[in-house]
Image (cartoon, rainbow, N blue to C red; front, side, top):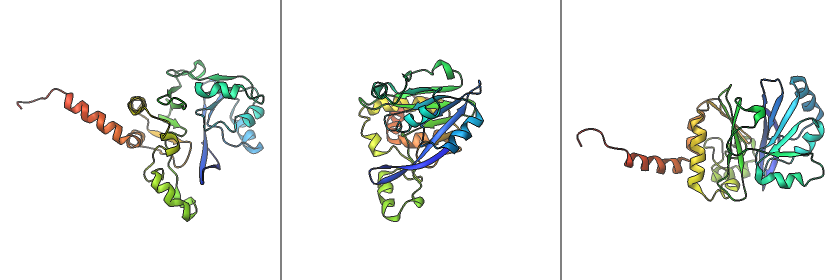
Length: 239
């Protein structure tokens, strides 16, 4: 886990975080690349070869150029909706589109992946590291620790529901997902992975109760769906 400098989303400074997984081959897989400097580059090289760098959504790609220059041997990945845009940049080498419904061959069996695509212009890839039961999320959930913010900005985070006490989908992301039923389908699949931990790209991360955090994220969607299931279940007993 690498915590980076804040990035501004409107008037709110969002903390940033990269997640690094060491694959069975010893190669490193990096999700949501943050701003990189020489110290971080040397630290990563000491761990292994950076082989895969993933921009999981259209919001988390700004550092891809710097990372591709620091690690020119690495393969770059992103969601299909962003791949064409990034491929048009002269500063970037070839970038591959992530599979929507199955992991890439390079990390198959080690890291699950699922691309949430219930929005016409926004996709987010979510990953699950099997060895540690860890869900890796970029912008689907934010949990901003408001004690680190200036006092006048804290109410804005509280009103958005993205403070660390509640953790929720940021409004800037929520607006993209028009198909709430499809979104609920995708989230239920992620819950089915049974995560023990959730690492977020922005804010506090959760070392336990991963399923509870996911269910809280879309409590209304899941509540309605489970209520419908309960009504449709055959009744047991004499009544």
